[in-house]
Length: 496
Image (cartoon, rainbow, N blue to C red):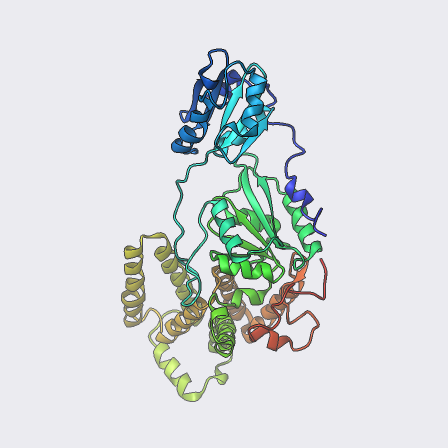
């Protein structure tokens, strides 16, 4: 069923002409790697036979010196494995048949293949007289150890997280889903970076139409380098200009495996310690990491709380500005008197207060993110306590404005997805400007435009607002209750 589903993804850039259309030779290879101090070569005599001279090439740092010595050089110089009197072709056949202690021995006959192997951590044995080569797997084990997740922490969940090495990440997923139905297709993207991208899907659960659509988009991806997740997200999203995220990021292999079991398609990129899942819905970004490890009633209550925080974080500052500027009659009398008293000596309008506080909140957040942890914590404390308190005492802003902005910011921090939190901050500011322009009418008009945008938004052809818009019964129950509406495709009523 999935024989040709990822045909385009598996053959990415194979239609291009070889980058180095030379015959295999040491001179050409040294010319390609000129001014590369880490490119190393060593001449060897097969079985110590003076008539069989070969050259071993590798890039220092990408290969393991121990593997190179014990698994490649030692058997190549062993007379017992490569007896004297064999021709170079006979020696080549013996090496491919297992004369070298290595799990991988690939025959190469083009310079393009040789360069590709060298830059990906292999060592290459050159038979210059025959214009042929054999590459051996000898990647270095220097990599970051598997550690606990730093962003998606869970009390009762697994304690392993993705790292920057692709093969380690694929193994972590395989350990979660121990079945041959879990399929893996790899391709290389980026004209310069040649970054390996792995596509995961569960045969029988993933939608073949969705898989084919993703394969076509990857096939059309033409970039210089793939070193950041945002490059993939911009080019794979249905609406790259939308502030809402359309690929779900996770650093947890168990969560990644869970989404694959639900019929989604996963992407792992070599060099990035995160997994990407698609298609997704807005509801997926409001599900917490530990929901699957909690009681169903507790998890559903927390989901409902996150939805409430989502709306409060987005709407609260705009509602305060609209009511304070245009609809004071909606404020209870005692609260209105308190607001008037607090505003008597403040020289700025309510709109300027809220906009200024929102900008200050964003500046403090950025400062805390880009500074080292001890300094970042100190800056946050100074901004929250000293600057805020001083601003109130100096009558620059009113206490109610600080309370509204702080409450909206805290509500935004309860969202499990940082990408969704960034979208909420942008929409929050836009709603404040709409409230300044036309009060509650402006907020209502802006919300109508937002709902229209969400209704038109798709994720690989699937409704972004499912389960509210998939036409199936009990949409709100499936939106909140854990275990409902999460079986397989996020929108089974609509095909891409």
